[in-house]
Image (cartoon, rainbow, N blue to C red; front, side):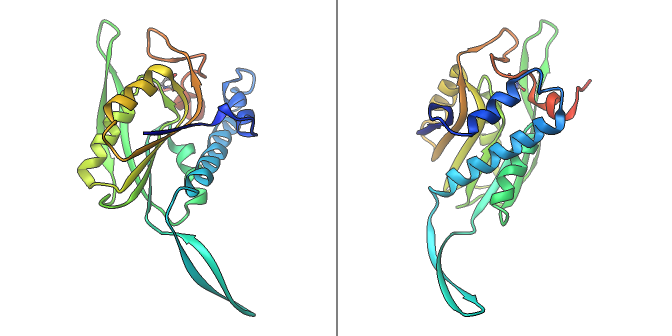
Length: 217
Ligand code: URA
């Protein structure tokens, strides 16, 4: 499995990661969502370098230009609800893509443990499609793994790009192991050391869904 970790390089992407982590900037939910979206755009640009391209003629007012264009075969898929701003950023660049959504939530037991439940899938056929599946936080890796496997009920993609803005080392190892035989590339913005007892990433940023959309019951 190929793994790309963006903050191993010095780029402007790191500014956006710093802002979404920063408690003093997190008070502005519009900026939080917009930063996730901007990072989705950068992921889309980097992923676009790995796609198959075809020479295509374009008629201009003055002649014919030959452009090398990516095949229009992309499905952008996201895990609800925290994935929505990142999804929008990916879609800003892959603006001809079809879309898929999977809901995943933590169902807590009385002793504070939880299972991830997948309840809703909306997806086109994924047979031979190039799928980009995004979730801003790759914590234990469970949601990404379950969402991936749930989407396989809608067909066998040719390749899946898994995108997370912040991943824990544990989550990365989990996904590497559970999806090791799958046609997958992993794109991570920043890799953090730990998960706390509630499976939140440390230092992480807190709850991405709440920061983007407000607290929930
Ligand atoms: N989901 C979040 O929003 N944050 C985490 O740290 C882990 C999962």
